[in-house]
Length: 139
Image 1 (tube, rainbow, N blue to C red):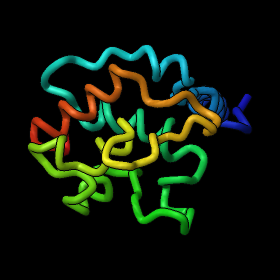
Image 2: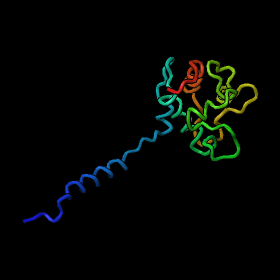
Image 3: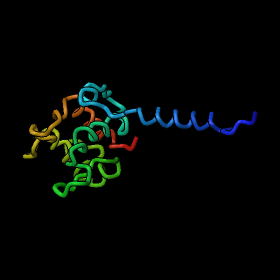
Image 4: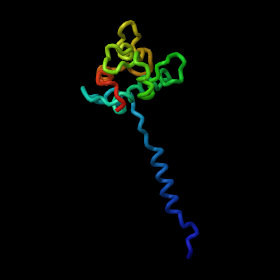
């Protein structure tokens, strides 16, 4: 008997594969972000810094470019480092980003305590400062 559906196995495989992909969720929770290890040196933007920005700064629309309230956009390395006043590579003490996350020089602490996520913790602040001190590299 001739098989009227010669590619049924391929169709079933493709359907199963697509279902399995859609069930993957790489979104980190606040607790996972807050408990992630950030090394004291060799801080990586993509691995350590961008996930903090995504969860703490971009998730509510504050620094994702959709809000007209701020010109600071933290959705990518290029946008984060576009203004050397915001991120001054090699000098965290001269970076407005550090002033904001520490509430220095009259800056409001970011994210604000009224924000729906917890503020940036000490490990995250140190990681951001180290990343800037190491040259704010796109790594």
